[in-house]
Image 1 (cartoon, rainbow, N blue to C red):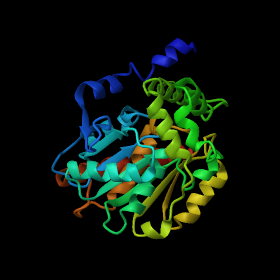
Image 2 (cartoon, helix red, strand yellow):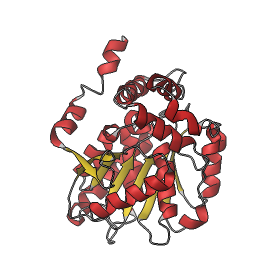
Image 3 (spheres, helix red, strand yellow):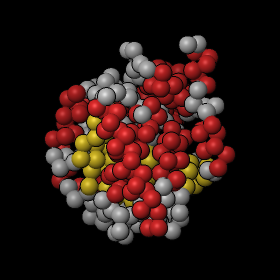
Length: 315
């Protein structure tokens, strides 16, 4: 398979082009600093006051969750996928994100975070625990302690490094071993997204990713958590995964046999199913992320997907 062909797979797919042509990208500034721009896609019924918000990894942009946006809005959910402005400090990020939720008039939300996005989601839930803004968390290939990357000593020098060097650091975490075509397409798409990020985007995200910090789980013990993990090669060590299970003993665990670092792209149907199962526990409450009249249709779809998924597992 030629690289030129795979490089284009997701970018020219009908789904991606449909997403780009139907969901507008919004840019919002909530800080005094005009250069701090949140970019986001907000799709699905605006009447929903507790949507699910997707937070990308270091290399990701708001587009990387397009499969989730399309599938979940099709079932009546309100979905927001975003990318961060340049924040160099976790507290500064949490403050900016809180202002963004205020601006969008969202009191509480469900957060899906991938890798760094999952760490930021946990830190935000922790910082706002006295006046909770996070109703539930879905953590995909995520971590709870930045020391696992052994980069805490360089965290303060990322801002000095040129963009090509930062890209090299990020690419070093992408899968090296054998991957199936869907995983190869996901990697190509993420490399393409990485190319759109500038030096300060990357340096600030790597700083947040590696700044010495860890999650204090006792502060978010009332938040419902689902952990989505892959069993094949990913940037996370098995120790980091075990640590997450220990922190959240009551979390639901959703395991994918394969999928690499970006299962939301390479195994989107399975990831979407796990997201639906997680959000289903809030149906009929004021924290439902779905439009009430869509619930029955969505329930049937989840049951069908579950059956199909189970029969595939049995094969």
